[in-house]
Amino acid sequence: MIVTLTPNPSVDRTISVATLERGAVMRATASREDPGGKGLNVSRALALNGTVTAAVLPVGGAYGRMLLALLESGDVDVRPVPIGAAIRANVAIVEPDGTTTKLNEQGPQLHPAELAALRQAVLDAAAGASWVVGCGSLPPGVDDSFYAELVGLCHANGVRVAVDSSGPSMAAALAAAPDLIKPNRIELAEAVGRDLDTVGAVVDASRELVASGVGTVVVSLGRDGALLIDAERVVHAVASINHPLSTVGAGDSLLAGYLHAVDAGADPVAALRTAVAFGAAAVMLPGSKMPGPEQVAAIAVTVDESPDFSRPLND
Image 1: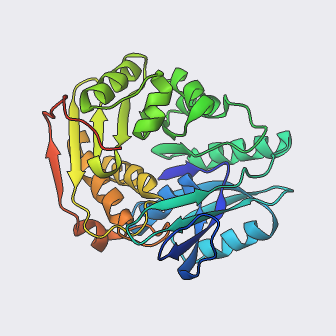
Image 2: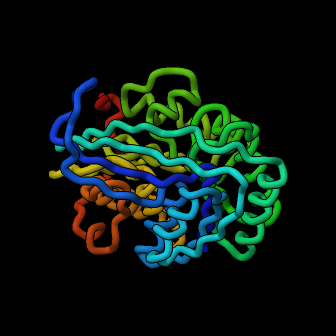
């Protein structure tokens, strides 16, 4: 089983528009609500593709009730931790070419007892699990060491840990040597303190993190696919996306694909191929809808085990 932790979940409302004009009144062409939060997205993609998963998350207020209702129809084992405040609601505005503008609320402040209950719920769910995955931003007031502490607690119980976050919480987690991280290029650049404009620059930055103790780095690169770097290899994979609908949750789907494959016994190269297929399939779906086996199987992925380090990356 793969356990995900989403400390700052949301209800995600996606609004499609013909064009986005600042300061103007526009009519939506479509709208939808989905469960939101990076860890939840990972669990949703895993469950759709047959991997057993449990999702731990704080829940409170009207949006919390709406979130649980949205999750009822899926196969995710939801482990809600009640909190006194309401969880957040996020808005994504999507244009016809897939360009996405996000408006994310901060989320509720968790009291120490609620935070302790959340941490204990993860440890309870992790008994017998193969992975624990800590994903997304931290609610206001939560210490930046939260994910680092999670890594230490899970490693003490023999469970591998993946982290997908950014900023100070990711920096702290890196020092705890997680087994896997999944930054995008901007988040990786933030972690190493410099711009990363080529494949080689991304590889060098990732190798620094691997040398410091991180097990595997999977970097999502948008239209340029993804790179996998560990102590033994550098692999690039890319998929062709003809009709993008929404980038919301694509990186989460990519991470789910990697974990899904590794959990089934795939080697890292095959796992990266699956990861990119998951991510590309998500881009071709509306809102933060996660792909199932049919959508994933329809994606053609090209894998290069000797990538050109001088290749520039798209913005």
